[in-house]
Length: 581
Image (cartoon, rainbow, N blue to C red; front, side, top):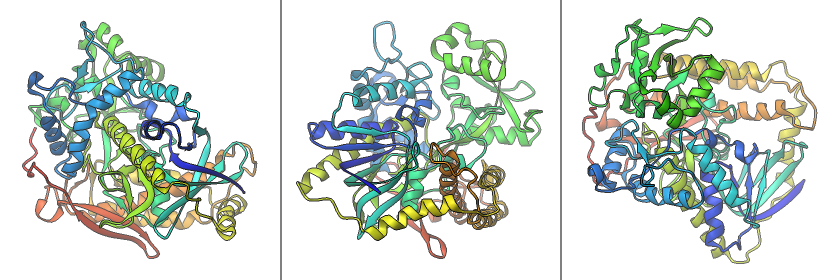
């Protein structure tokens, strides 16, 4: 087994990961050796798919905007489950991150006098989302990657799949990685690691996310005995194209798009009269499903899915081509529908993991729900739950989160490495290496009777039907039972492709194993939370219950299944109040 030694490993190459690597490099003046390990080519990370923009108060005082107002909007949008000290860090630092990306070359849309433009987004009191057409994530990723390619201390390992996290006596030691090009197994040792591997929305079949969004980093932490937080809260984006699930950015509504039922009515006036289509995503998603359930939607003949219409025609071709060109191009190419001329068929799709690896406010990965952290391990971006989103994320806060905690964890990891001086890396025993090699060998040699893709399809179908926008206790219990049965079946899978070069069959099996673990965690947490809050809408308990449930769910993988405990929400300034829009 090849062993590669570094000061810092960044697991994941999206906006959070690349930002962390850049700031760690700058903090150490290039004197820190960094490995970026990604199962894709770095520029294929799902961050490139972020469309609408990044939030931040660029012009305080204008239209009465302020840092405090951004914080209030975020906390109210979270249905008061966000940790308010973390939210304050987010909103104070977000404008600096937009400026940082401006300095490294992101081509923001600008007004006639050259100022960065900002558009309206759901749940925000005023427009405060900076954007680069409807390709914001791509432009941010391109700028980051251009920076990294100039840094001689950073080594990018494309198409290397991390499948095991090595922690001993509360300290990070390394990761075991499968080189997808050759099937070679590598041990990466380092003094520190930042997990920045994204979310897990591929536990669902109808999702806006890439097929690579399989929650690998979250699952690695979970399997290593580390706690996850608030996994019951999965965001469903209100507007995904039927039948593909391709994201239609919230910017389409921010620019003035309408949601229409089959009677041609803008039905959001019945659910959020003051915000209409720009209510927070959980409210809009529930409204859409309610319209469909009450027979006021349409039905797609190919997929059988119900939908409503997103109407952009009144915006005009000029505005659509200037601010939403990718949306128009995708709609024409995939559906042969031109939004300049026809409404788009949309419905809610799994989009964002609000929960994730349990971290403290600095992004340090926690060992328990108290104050014990793993030495040398951080998590940033969608995979890490510092809890700025609570039970519902406001659109465009995700890119701010990735940038802010990318910087925070990068600086912290660099300082930690510096504090260790020239201390040697921890040794990894031959027995441990042999055990990790056998994980891959045994999986590849398995000659069971179960096709892993059948397991994946059954899992996604179960989650889509029983753990969707509206949930019932019977449905969740049924999902828990099915997921448990699928986990047992997975032990009897076979890998048909025995080849060494780009064995995607083997990679997919590793991903499916991760997804099953996370599906189990999501369902277990959802069963326990007896209230409706944000993205967790439980039919039997339709109201938010601050008396009993103003707390975070902490979930562990145990020998007996799933262990659950709770942690209070941090309240600083904003007391919970009725959430009305």
